Length: 512
Image (spheres, rainbow, N blue to C red):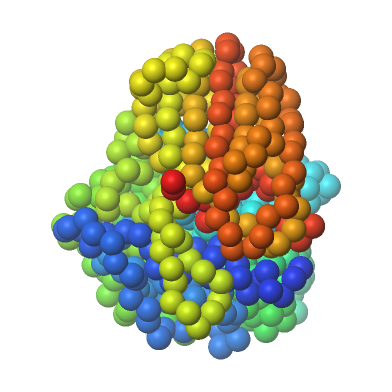
């Protein structure tokens, strides 16, 4: 089941010009994706654009693009995804990157509170989720949201999510005018406020509410009129709150020995954009896939949650139309070895952010391929960048916290150094401030100018330098770093008058 709790098995959002730019350059691989003819032969190809539209007639342009992209990817590749918890919304997505050297594309977030937090704490945690989701979208990723809703009107406790509820009791929550119904609407309106922030920021969201409804472990589970609950939320979010950035993902559990078949709980193709199934223990029964694919009738299907990373080669054989997957929270590291993670993310059949192709702002001109969105990285087993690198690879950006560990198995945890090189492309013609936070030494050149020079033993220090740059111009960038002993970290951020401080995103970086 999909949240860490008491069950026996854990399974579980400025300027208009900027926002228009972001539609093509940051949302996700909407125009093209550097991928492959997966499931058979490794090549690059544009993803087929489709005419499918979201079930919400007023869906935003971003939501339409996202859905079109997902449909076009079907049978061509599997988007990598990772879920994080409400309390630490960037924890496991960062661990995945630190382990594999690559970010997943889809970042799953949680809006449900289950740890007896105060209302103030819950509000702060949910705001942190929204802020992270906006940054994730700005940096080229896809956002998914899960909502482990407490029984409406109850406190923030796991027991109020997993509480048993009779059919008669459930009926009161979906009957207009009852106190229970009013509690449901109050809870929905509260969550809608956070989704409205994402809408106002132009962030499309794969919204997967009331998942695993065909199982009996959540209060909304195994109810004969589940569709009524879905339609109440859909109506409230679409017609009252105008949440036109949502793609509605219906996400049952795989119909195994603990779960019912799909069909009795399906709200209908007119209320669903995406269909997904939660599959654990590598139980990729062909019947689960075939049944969901048939029910989808051409809509994209995904693996909503998994504990163990799927084998892309096996999936290629008979289940190639899954378009995304999402590993559930800490199961990333508890259920998968480091080698499992590296192998999955480096597979030619897996879509990672490292495989995205560069895109231009909205224009009538064709997209120009400026090369791979990454920096070349050379890792040395000494602190002086001396000799032959022990490891050469491409890194999506400079954002690492190895703590007491090492960047890779061939690199020692102390006394190592790294050199990143490539090009950087600003969005605006103005002065940029670059920030390098490191433990230990760091040097940064941009446009062949040394902006930061702190080649010293230091802990958690941030240095900055400035440079005026022209929008759309490629500048050389070089970052050098060394680790002395103990904790190791390096982060490179930038800021300008029209751009908030953030990690320099992958879509602004290019290989040499």
